[in-house]
Image (tube, rainbow, N blue to C red):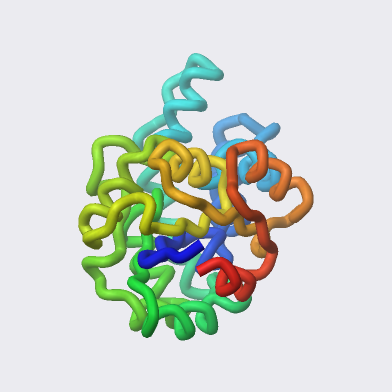
Length: 220
């Protein structure tokens, strides 16, 4: 499996942040009276989704409008907690250091652009990426699970889909990769329950599943 461009998701892949962000989501929804959305339930239902998509899912399910300021509050709270609770995924820096001289590397995330850049900076990973090689949902018409972001990323980086490999932790991201026709490795190392996450990624269509980022090097 010779690939020239390695596309990393950010949250839950390079940065161990999925539980942090879904805990914030749970707290905000509990305030609204939706106590069934525990942090683990939010990970299961919303992992890898943009907050605009989560808002639509909730409104469709519950038939009630979700205030726009809830999204703004989420962004503000996440920005504050990132300062003390954010860490890089195990092995992320080692893998990036190994790949950067032999492959093109970039990030493609469904996250809010400011939070993605801050996540990479806070965890010491940003110096390995040019800022214009960090792609986010704001740059395309549709976020993951649509293929738009990955196809846009490949095009901007100068590669065809078959030359790319995507590293993703969420079923949403895996489905986007499959829709884009790009090989995808499902990563479970940041998951609360790795076995459950592995099943979800397998069902979404991941070509390979690993719980250790170092194992990616065997497939590039």
